[in-house]
Length: 242
Image: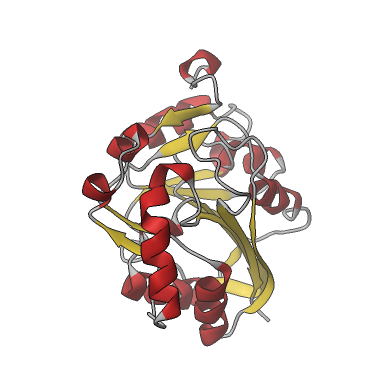
C-alpha cells in the first residue's frame, strides 16, 4: 500500500468493514517482532490486513503465516512483500478461529492486533483453546485490542460499566453500535464489537493454561484523535504457554 493512501492520522480503512489499520507498529506488535530472534517454528499473524506487522516479521527471517478474511488485503500484502522474503510468507484467507487448522505445538509465536474485538464470548473461548493447542511450549501470544474507553464508542461506556457492576461474563459485548454511537468511524465497523479489558482477557487465557505476562489498559503511541479518550483506549496483552 502506498504511503499516500493513509490518512493524516496514519490509518486507513480496511476493505472489509473491520475498522482501520495503522501505518506503524504499535508497541505490542513491535515486541512481537523483536521476540522472533531465535524462533525457528513458523509464526502466525492473525488479521494481517495490509501487512503492517507481517512485513517486519518477515524481515527478521521468520516464516510468517499471514491470515486475513479479505482476499484483497492478501493480494496487496503479497505484492508488498520483498522478493527475498516472499518464500517465507504463507498467506491464508480464513476466519479465526473456526477456519484455521494447525498441528499441536507447531507455532512459535502468535500476533493478533485489533482482532479479538470481533469475537463474541464463545468465539473468544474457542480462540484461546486453539492458540494454546497450536503454540509450542514457551511460545507467546501478543495482542492489542480496543477497550470501551474510546471516543468513537463513548456512548457504550456507561453500558459497559453497568455490565461490570452486575458481574456480566462478557461486559464489553457491544451490539447495535451503529444505532448507539454517533461517530462517523462507526460506519467502518461491524454492528457488533467485543470491547475488551484486562480482566476478561486474563480470565480466558489463564483458563486454558496460559501464563499472563502483561495485561494493561494504555494509550497507544500514535493513537488517532478520533479514538483518544482518557489513556485507556487499548489493552495490551502478552501470554505465554508454559
